[in-house]
Image (cartoon, rainbow, N blue to C red; front, side, top):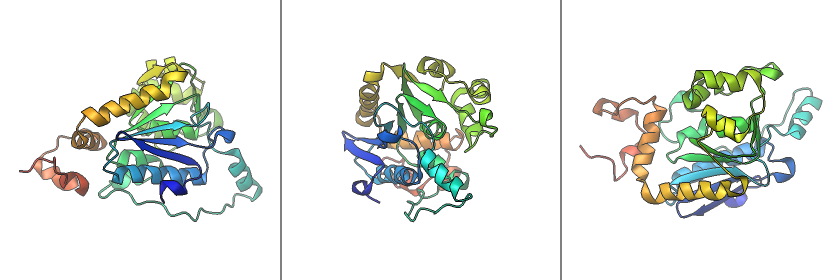
Length: 258
């Protein structure tokens, strides 16, 4: 799927940065089947595009994503739990993606480019999951961030019990997951979920500026390699481990030739 075919995602590339915008503002960017497929295709396109070095993800309008689209959930409930699976094809995972990461929600971890979420406004439920699987998260003073799983009688779904402690430590992850209280940008930054906060009107500009600086000043090979190292739990890359690296990394012209 090409960006010109997207209906729920806007995709633009400038100065080495792919700006991916969740684009359903009438529903406050509520997450649905087509948006999920298009989001994965947008990341795949960025992964393959040599002109893209960094990806920025944000929401159109006043919110990042308020959670699953209730219209789609209601249609499933009214059909007694039955639903029509999307007929849209999904992109493949990058070559040599570890099996445990071959999950739709983990796709941002699998591509070679850093993914930065510019979390504007409200971010809850599925939106919280999408932002948590970005490599970095920048937010705003007016953020409303909620996980809500415990209050709904649910476990920490979609691997949040694994990814959140890596981001912010176990105790801070528990604080977000157990009580489900809404927190603002300042508190999310204090806990370590957000790395930077800006005034709402400056968030996207500042995030894109940061991404552009990475694209212009940081080695594409180094960023890809560092991301891969972190994906493999920070193990040192030594000769015997080269076979575990993806072929796009080994064949990169900047990869050390031994």
